[in-house]
Structure formats: structure tokens, C-alpha cells
Image (cartoon, rainbow, N blue to C red):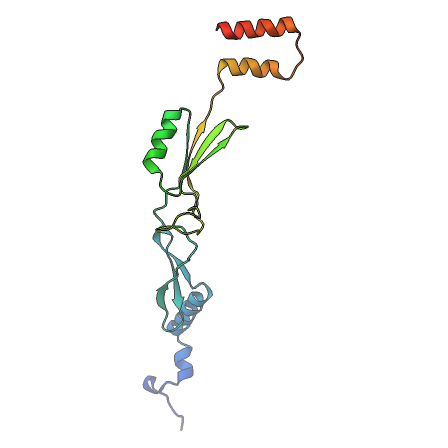
Amino acid sequence: MATRTTPQASTSAQAEAHPESALDAAIKAARLASPVIEGPHGSRHILVPEGFRLEAAHDPHALPPHIIKTAVVVDQRASLSAYVNRFSDVRSILIADYDAGSIKAVLDWHFDNQVVDGGSLDPQPREHSCTLKLRPSEEFKRWAEMENAFHGQAEFAAFLEKTLST
């Protein structure tokens, strides 16, 4: 006489061989292989193996999502002054580059070591700046053309006379 197995008397080996359990095992393996999930606005979460609960993963060095990231370039002093007056705080700094002919305001620089209340020496993002790109005047352009060459006294005097008369 042959023995028959009924569906109610299935063994655990047969349950693991079921296609749904194989799919569940594959999904669990995929979650373990890549546990970090990127969310909106740079948020990150990690699937923890105990029942795969989702926990927030905070990066202490990540920039806050509301940080201003822009580099404005202006060509007038008044524009630089207006922009800096609007966005500056105790971290702001002006940097002049004479060779490049520019003045740069970095509005989210580091706190200086004299700040007592509300500041620290922690690095700041340095992502928000405004640069005044100076344009050379006509007189400066003429002088630059004459600069790296030897000229006779009469020629140089004529150049000065022409430059001063305009």
C-alpha cells in the first residue's frame, strides 16, 4: 500500500521550495546587499536586518539641504555691496585678487577664532559667493600696451600728454 501525503502534512522542505518563498528570499537578499536607500532632499536610510526596519542614516559632515549654493559675478561695485549687505553674516569675508582684477565675497566662510557666542571653528560650506570682476579703464589698457617695451623719452612724453588730455 502506498502512502499519500496531503497538502496539510507538507514538510518544511516543501514549504521552502515554494516559488513565493524563493521570491521572498531573493528580496531579502537584495535588501541586505544594498541596505542604503536614498530619499528626497539628500536623506539616507538604512534597512536593518531585524525585520528590515528603516532607520535614518545621518552624515555629520553633510551640508544642510537649505544651504545656498551659488556663485554670482557682478561688474559694478554697487552691485557687490548690495549683494553682500543682503546675505552677509559673521562668517563672511572679502578676498581681493589684484592679478585677476577681482574682489570676491565668500558669504559662508569659516567663523574666525574670535567669535565667542554662536560660532565655532567647524568648517563651513564656502558655497555662496559674489565676485566683482573689475573691468580695465581705457587709460589702463593704453598703459598696459606701453608697459613691457622700451620707449624713447619723446614717445613716452607724447603718450602721457595724450593720456592726460583725454
